Image (cartoon, rainbow, N blue to C red; front, side, top):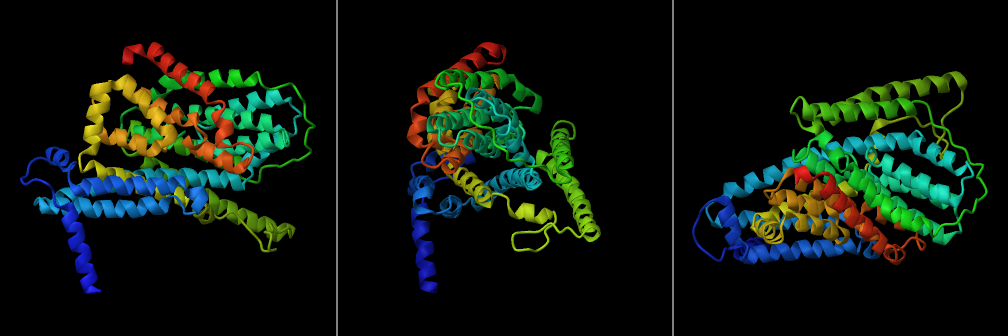
Length: 472
């Protein structure tokens, strides 16, 4: 075992040996390390990990596993490389910065996911779906109502939850009408991604930009109109393919459970707290979200005791499928958080952070923002995010930290948020609906409408350049 460990260490030490000698500043060293064997291996590891992420549905390997493994190996290479240069402290400082960035993102998202799960358990989203399904709207009205609601919900709830709720409405109303389900799902994906682009709470990328201090909370609303145009252009084009058929109204009815409205209020209060912490107290938004977690914690205690008392008085147990009593339990809502997604973010942030230590982000920044120019570079970011996930793309841009105007930071926030709509695999909303409407809403059914979505993407950018020209 010891021999194996020694061989393992020697192997990585050899790979990490830089192809030059000498010292210098951190950025200068990193630029030269781009030609080292360790740097090339880091890129290869990240590419392989991301290839396995693409194959998640085929091989049933959770997306977090390959990136977390790759992140650990990449940072071994970083540490050994800088140790060989006599700067072991540099790698330690760098990874601690990455840990801090991830910790803030993790705590923020964990609280948001817990609130969403709590509202889901209290039937908030189910009651909305029940209301819409029972109204007897025409298919064209359902198309526009679900699109508007997706655009309005996603700035507060995440685009994934929004897409799942609205997608369930479309499939319930138009079961068996495949052409409508396809355009309805595409409309929801585009609307949810566009709505999430002008709010720090609507998408992970906007949250990262806000937490980095590149765009302040109120400044996100400068891209409201471009985001709206990004959705409206393809929505109008797709609406011409929908008739005025009126499906039979469903009799399904779901009511919200006790405390649902108060949890919704506490979620709004938590968002306000996070904004106050960031804007006025100069504290991380995650700290404000954790205070909001305290709000929910105390209310959940009240709710649990109230439900227990009601059971004792009325002898009407809240029964689970197994016949046992169930009451609102905050820690069950935490357990239902998307842990695979949270760990995926860890892997991505650490992978990109490790690769940047070899100078690749600096080189990429120089090519994109100096050679192409910021407008074309930021437009390209959105196109790339349709193929890759927008999270590593945005984190890479933040790691590059190019010198550009406030208007350009708004532009990259917009493009990274809405670019994923170009392909069904480009956003969490699209991937989720492909699973919900399996066999109907597919990669190729989405691809047929990509030209219309691309037209909206271009129109949104054009509107931003016109409306916010003073910021460019």
